Image (cartoon, rainbow, N blue to C red):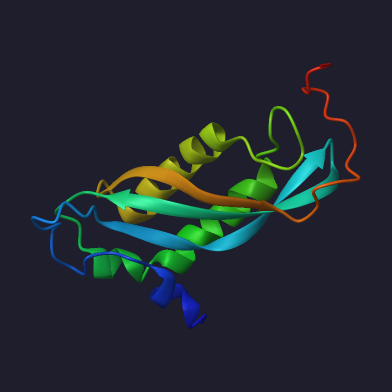
Length: 137
């Protein structure tokens, strides 16, 4: 579908990580996730996610499932937005990682070991409402 998807996914092919110590992983193409107040969208965060795999994982086979991992992330982010705890320019990374790990294991099996957020870029940086969790400082 997207030519950049497989090219952007890094990893050591279908072989286990070698003596270089490079971990096996799949990078999910960046997606825009909503940031909300109640049911009103106030911002979007473009987020990059990496799925860290076991040394014995078949990376090529799992890489083919990248569109399904991405779809699961988008659906989860719209079902219950990962709105940040202190501002509207970042996501609740720990909750996103927890939800995405469950989804990734469901889709890819036990070879998915962990999830890392590799990037977050807010569409809007200013002109946002005051976040109720922001400190008064």
